[in-house]
Structures are given as C-alpha cells and as structure tokens.
Amino acid sequence: MKKGKGIAVSSPKSGEDTEKDSPLPTIRLSSRNASSKYDFVKVKVWLGENADHYYVLSRFLLSRMLTVTKIPNHVAIKIALELKKLLIDNSLLDVSQSDLEANLFKLMERRGYGEEYISRYKMMTRFHHQRVPFVVLVCGTACVGKSTIATQLAQRLNLPNVLQTDMVYELLRTATDAPLASTPVWARDFSSSEELITEFCRECRIVRKGLAGDLKKAMKDGKPIIIEGIHLDPSIYLMDDENKTLANMLEKSKEANHVSVTCDDSTATEIENNSSGVSGNDSKKSNCPGHVSSEEGSSANQLNKVSDTLESINLSRNVSGSKGETPKDTETGGNSAVREEKSGAEPIIVPLVLKMSEFDHKALLEEWISTRMFKDKCLVQDKDKLIANLKIIQDYLCSFKSQGLTVVNISPTTFPQTLDWLHSYLLQCIEQGILSNSNEKGVQPAEN
Image (cartoon, rainbow, N blue to C red; front, side):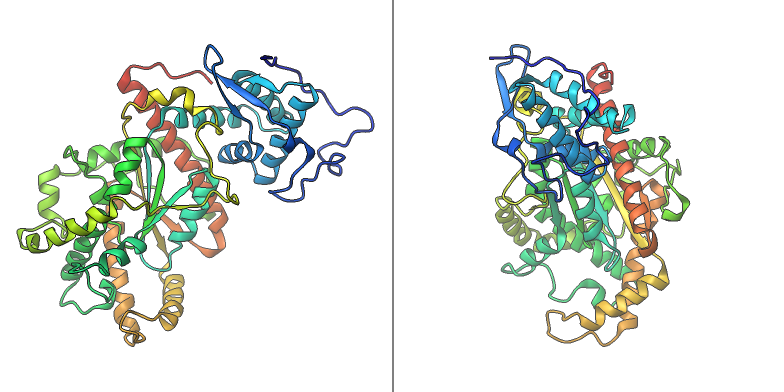
C-alpha cells in the first residue's frame, strides 16, 4: 500500500486555465452532477493509526461537506474535483486522511476560504465522528415556510433526514379508533382560546408519541434529524425521560445565542436572550394548557397500539439531493474507524419557531384556504375563524420566546438572508453542543 504524502498546490502553469477562465480540458463543471474522467479512478483514503480501514473518496460527498462550511455549492464542486485531480495526477491512489485534508485545506485557502472555513470543516468532521444526536424542530402555523426552511437547511448542513408531522398525523388519524379528528384543530369551533390551545397540545402529544421510534433511533445512533410541521409543541420535546426541566435544556441554546453571529438587520431574525428562569418540571406541567390529564387515559391504550406500529416505520425522508446516492459514514470522513465512539452523547435539541408578519401571513393564508379541501370535502367557508385560530396557535408558540426559544421572522423579501443566518446559527449550536459534551466527558477540545 502506498501512503500518500502532502503535496504543495502550485499555481497554474503557462497554458493552463485558471479558476476564472474556462473549465479545464476534458473536465466539465457546468452542473452539480457533471462527471469527468477522474470519476473512473478510485482513490482510497486510509484511516486509523495502523491504516487498517479505508473508504473510497467521493467528490460528491466531499462537496456536500464543503457546502456545510458555507462555501457556495458551485465552488465546493470545483474544489472537490480539483482535489481528486490533484491526487490522481500525482499517482496518490492510496492516501491517509490527514494528507487528504492537508491538500484539501490548501485548495480551500487558494480560493480564499481560509481558517474560518477550515475550522468549520474540522468541527463538522468531529461532530459526525462523535455521533452527537442533533434534533432541529421547525415549528409554526400554516404558510410560514416550515417545509422550505427545513429542506433548505437539510441540504446546506448535509442532514439527510427531514420528518413531517403531517405524515404522522395522517397515519395516526386513519388508524382504528384513533384519538384524532378528521378536521384540523384550527378549523373547529371552540368556546375560548384556552380550549383551542388545550386541544392543540393534546394532538401535539399524540403526534409526539407517533414520532417516538424515529426520535429514539436518532438518539441511540447519533443521527441528525429535522422535524417540521404544525403539530410541534417545543416544550414536549425539551422534556426528556429524565425529567429535565425546559430551562436546563434551553441553557445550551441560550449560550449559543451569546456567540457572535454576523447578521444583517434586513433578515428580520430575532433571538431572545432573555435569561428569565422557567419553573421546574412539575410546575410547568400544571401551568401548561397541554398538560396530560387523567381524563385522557381512555385513549392512551389506543394510541399506544398505533404508535407501537409506527415504531418500526422509518418516516423520515431523504433530501441528500443525489440520485440513488446515499451518504454513508465511511464515505464522509471515515466514521467506521470511530464507530466505537457511540457513547450516548448529550443530544443537541434546537427548537425554531417561524413567524411571519400579519399582513403577509394573512395574504398567504387566504390563498391557501381558498384552494384547500379538508377531509369532509368541503371548502372552508369561515376564513376569519380559521385565520383567528391559527393566530392563537402562533401566539402560543411564540410565547416560548420569553423562555429562550428562537423566534425567526420570515419575510419573502429577506428569505435568502434569513436562511444564511439560520445556517450560521445551527453551526454554532453544533459547536456549543460538541464543546459541552467534551467538557462533560473531560475531553480536551481538539485544536483547529
């Protein structure tokens, strides 16, 4: 086996094309899935102290990792191809992980993506190696961009699993003796806003039960997952089985908020750094409209039967963006060599509540309502009632802002900037979670 050595990346020679000129001869970079002659040559990247494990370098997966560091997608594709060309042209078909990264970082610096991006790359590599459970909750009412935000963040952060609560709701609703109504909670009549919120929280707990299998697998295997949908009550997911309080779980999120983030005011993104405490677990349950009461015991057995069936179903959908190509641990950086590091790391739970201005939201809701058919096959006639109910649910979700949750204002005119900010924010949450896990285990953080 030949072990590759780090090589210098020289400037283009006379007659060669530069990055600003036309593409290199025989290499096409016009699209993300463009192929080249270099794709037919395998480069083995060896892992471990004894170099007894290897994975085959995939420039697609490498470009995805570079995109996570906030390098533009088209540049990431070029860097990945340049790296493979560099290795093959120098007959380095067997190279160590450290030598691979050394050459990769030189190519990144050559294109102007220096220490900041290299640090992010190292941090994300460490995140995948440690298999830290990472759960992002994208909460909000109808027509605020939950699905778009969740999908875009999954692609940017190379997180393949996005789970929609609407799918779980439908599976539970159509089950035998399911404790869910065919008409959405916001389309029903209630005598008061408190009654609406109580019913909303009850349905959120039912959906949470249906998600138990996917969440359990994510926590056990250290798999990241994004959950989006209307039936998401953040407090339910932040109360774990060990009766940790909401305040304790939010502390890490608030610490991440104190880290400096460069964000233009036009993003209309809000972060609440309110340090006000939250009552303990018992008091939280007694004050929350969604507290489980003894009256619900009659439907508990029915729900358990349905949720047990859902335990064996993988409801998350893949958004890797490849055609028939699924990211594997060994291809993204050799996680097989550190598979034994699955040590039950403290999960990183990041709840995001999306909110839109009343004018924009009402316009989108009216268009949505006019074209939506509910389960009784009748168009909703009372638009004002439905919009008012959704407003009550939105106010309830945004009320968690005072307890440290992040409320993000969504605007069609500033959507790209908001997406960029969320990308940076989630990277900070991951970094904070890694540091917290390292401190709890007494592990010295790796130097960048």
